[in-house]
Length: 140
Image (cartoon, rainbow, N blue to C red; front, side, top):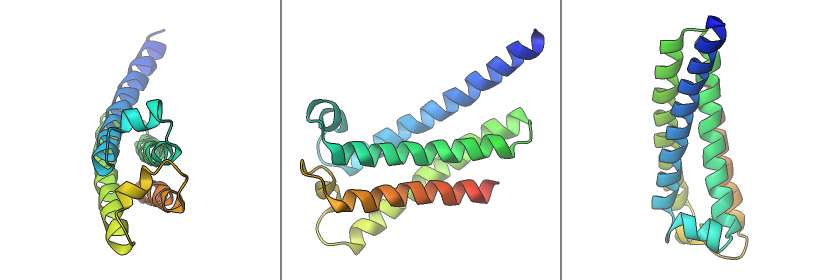
């Protein structure tokens, strides 16, 4: 029974770190897009904004999973690693977004909140997912 309680607490801790990192990712996407992300997705049902946020959350989740797997059952290492690599991943994702914005015509943030589906969103989403996968591979 003690083992189950310990495993549940460890899972809770990892879950909390993951949720905090995803919340930070939400804030970063909100800052990168004009308007309020909450309104864009839940009120205006903007698919572009939803895809961008979803890819960010999946990228962060991939990084956290890799950090947990790589921890070799060392809870402290896994928790600290998940947090540190997650923050690093968010920084790299933000930098990649800025670089993509510089390399493409127009203002990427404005294209991403256009009510009509825009191909630039798929490119930006792929950058988020690829960044998460690259960092996850580096961890493992």
